[in-house]
Image (cartoon, rainbow, N blue to C red; front, side, top):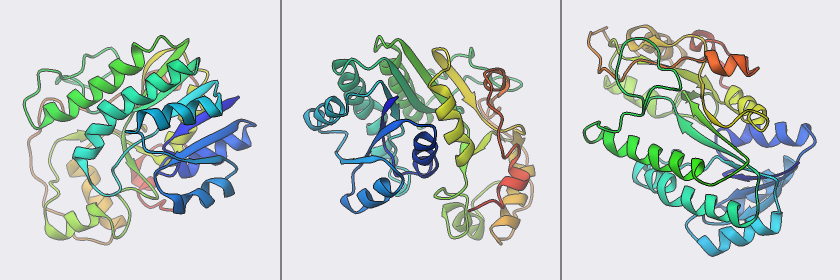
Length: 284
């Protein structure tokens, strides 16, 4: 299959591109940085330097690749620029969907997140509505995700799969030595409370993305097997990052409930890193 990966050099891309190539797909992958072209080519992809906010250039790149499927992995998380990341979700996704529609793409797979559900008890499944009535600043995150998912859903593709990932950990994320979370732990600014999070190792996220090319349309939670409150996972992360663990506290917001991976498992996905308890230490 001819596949266009928008955002091929991020935390997932480093695993995704080789997996797609090994599966026999013809891959074109984008990057914003000319210096990353060599790495994409080494992984077996055709590399394209393009800015997702340049509608015409993006449309031309997609058309030239003539893909049967587009995979949306565009983010701006490495530098911590959340405003840019929100713009990518809204404007960047719209540009990419429009380019894919114009090129006659049949399958569209997009990266989303699993902590935007309405509040409640127990793990959130895919049919739980998004938390569209959330106050700011959470409203900015939920609104950006809703815009992304609405653009993909309304694209008229034969297949559209929205992967609602857990919090990424693994190489290239904020959960490795010398990262943002290591700094937060050192500063004592990472609470160990009752807020439940669902995680996923980036290699497992890449595996799910490959499988999603054949999944039915709709959202799928891609999270590991052990959603857990921060008072459980923060001390383990502190040990993995060689930082002091904070004292446990209590309390959580209603939306801090974690997500269920039952549907993803029914579709055939099984995480190689089933829990953060061991996965936090797998940084290679």
